[in-house]
Image (cartoon, rainbow, N blue to C red):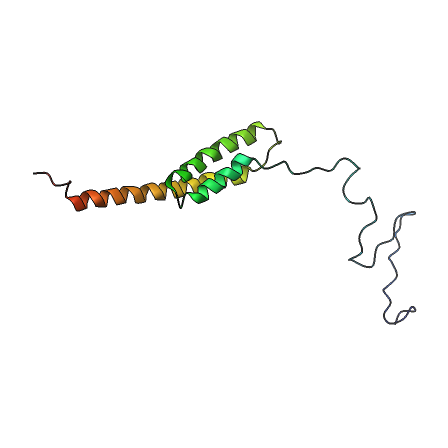
Length: 132
């Protein structure tokens, strides 16, 4: 048993350096004020996400419902990635733009394939493919 009683926390660990703060015994206790990050005014924030990148992803996902939206998502994703690379870190969202391009290409390609199969079935059903 500790000299303070059965439920008391253990004493803080002493540091070998003079004037060094003592280690906290409670892991849930917040650190002292001003100890988060660096000096005041040096906080770095993530750059804003490109709105074209978000539009590319949305259009790519909407490509499942409307054929041209997939290709618009592909185009917007290309424009967004180009703008993000030219912004020198002022714009973010390169991964979102790439995802929009990939999803747009997939949905546009599948939609175009379905459209071609549909019109091919109509041509076969009408008998236009027979040559005499």
